[in-house]
Amino acid sequence: MKEIKAIVYCSNTGFTEAYARMLSEELDLPVFSEKQAHLHLGSGDSVFFLGWVLGSSIKGLEKARKRYDVEGTASVGLVLTDQSVAEIRKRNKIADDAPFFALHGGLAIEKLHGFYKLVFKLGTKALERTSSAPADEKMETYKILTEGASFLDRKNLKPIVSWYSKHFPVKK
Image (cartoon, rainbow, N blue to C red; front, side, top):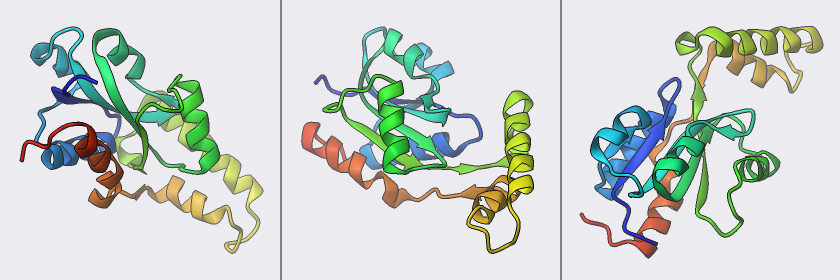
């Protein structure tokens, strides 16, 4: 592994960006959005990449792989079951021994637009049709889809910080 030069992220509603900035503080590394990174990094530079998840796909990861040497990856999403994390790893062709971390993000309904807003509206309507009572286990999901939620927490970065400190000297 080469020394990581920066953290690069792709964010849709701000949760991935927030985690990237927190991680930047923890590791004392510069942080760039995928749109800004090319202005500061060269092709082949080593980076740690964070991307938001849509349908098990880590947004921005393929683009980052084409330009940089991605030494580690984190996905930021709403669902973090063992099955969903395994599917994210598989769908994004992340080897079992590669550094991969799944972070619990959130849903900021007010920041959604276009296609993504439509998808969540349709999901909410489907839950409304199938949920019969407030005690229904689907109601927590319904509440998240209608009101939004944030699961951002600096302590969620501990596994990444631990991995990084084992492989790279922390500059602090």
